[in-house]
Image (cartoon, rainbow, N blue to C red):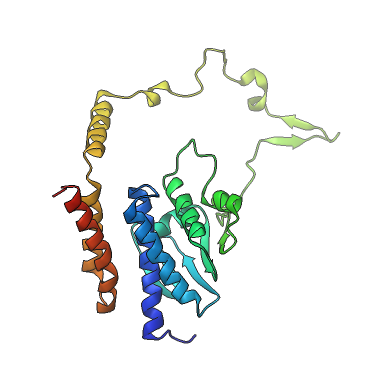
Length: 258
């Protein structure tokens, strides 16, 4: 495999940074917000620059990281804040942005990630299903079923059943219905104690609600950007972070959030 030139490597990291930045922005701001629209435009620009010389931009997804051409370009914790984690969680192992991809397609993809960031019991579908329904013309993906391939051999348990000479099955006394415990309509199918909320649970939930109501999103975004700056090891990538940091600082000053 040919190693990318410094210019190619730089734009690859720029695309990943812009993609992750747009993902973070759509989690914090409505689609028509200037900050999200700026992040979306930046992602479109770097993708267009790369796709002008290539047919597609392919990302390989692992549990907590994303790679391009065998090089890790993004890595994060195993939680819903990590773009790689939610893609891998839903079974996606490859994403490709194809030549001529349009802004509305990128936005639709980011909206799918935003809507399915958190798994809930009420969720009717996942990222794979949502992308399949959208059928975006210039975005391709590869996915596999989650939870079925466990690499474990399945053994049928011994039910203590034997065949007699006539070919019929004999059941041991332990298997006969008259040995079953007595059941009634009043017999609970689960322990209701597990469904009860204790006073400690209520206090904890109350604190979580207050904490969420008082959460300052600007402060949260700034902390992310500053963390990214601390983790950058290549000077060329600092220029990519600074415009986002300037936008956030400008928004904070405008809204008197300082």
